[in-house]
Amino acid sequence: MSAPAVVKNDTRLLAFGIVGMAELSPDLLWQGLQSAALRLFHTLRLLGSMEYERRLQFMREQMQTDWFVCDWATLDAQAASHKMLTLSKLSQLDSPLPRRLRLYFKGEITLTEMQVQRHCQMTLRRFPALRLRALEQAIWQDMDKSFQLRENSVSVRHALRLAASLDSRPASNRKGLRRFLQNAKAGLPLSYLDHTLNLDWYAAHPRLKKTQWQVGLRKTTTIDGATVQLAFEQDPFEILKLGTYAGSCLSVGGFCDYSAVACLLDANKQVVYARNEKGRVIARQLLAIDEKDRLLCCAVYPHQCSPAIHAAFKSYDLEIAGLLGLEFYQEQADSSYDVATILAQDWWDDGPWLEEASPADGPQA
Image (cartoon, rainbow, N blue to C red; front, side):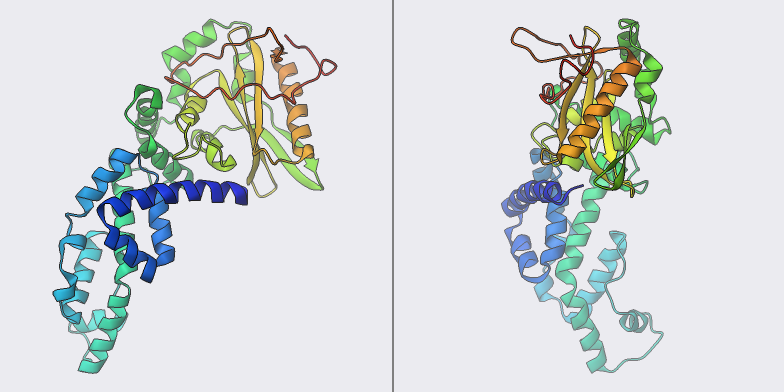
């Protein structure tokens, strides 16, 4: 992901997280800024992934837990350290206590009163960051309680955050994404490919070479002296990251985050990633088949891609169109197209890429 994309995504999620925390726990926000700013920013980004109403409900529930209802100021240093240790275990966090203090509490070593106080004070200085880590753990437990998938990979955790960001409107595609995650939990992450509605769409488009459209094309090229590979993404969890990689409105918490789900679930849509030698995504493009069996090539993201990357995608699009035996859709004054939603309830139509094939490049409609 490019640095501008990271900043754009993080800024939006930070803003959402600040609103959720400030409404229900301004003291926690202020304490975090003063004593654990880096941890706070990490927590806020994660909290900001949650849809607004869900975010507020989550924070209301957390404010009733021992981490927040306990009057910490009334506890002496040893009692507070004991409490932190107990709550850390319940939150499945590592012990915040120095090793020697843990051994002292277990009765395995002796310490002077001065040594105990010094270790306890060290423990208490960790409290602001520790409570934020406990909040993060609770967020993940809330997001993952129906799926138990978050330990699988970074991409899976991204999918959980995306699911948490979608509201309850049918157009948000939350139901479809949750069904996908439930199937992934059952070991069937690709079951959407054989859904009846997707199979019916293929049956209604007999001209389309189904296998070629599903497999796509893997093409290696050289851009500015570096090896770049363009291919249809086959990992469903990676497909869901097309907005996050580009820093676009299809990312977690974005205005059109629901459309990332449509790009995964619908048989008529494919995501092409350009990856460098380290496997990092440097650009992406959405391809779709319209109802007249024409290839719609959407814009390449991020917008600040170099001309060389644009040229690589243009070459790729021409080659995949030739393999599929399809014409390009070309935007003209009296032209139109219709890309259906199949399993998804809605998707964001980004329109055709205006830099796509010229009349000399190949067949158009």
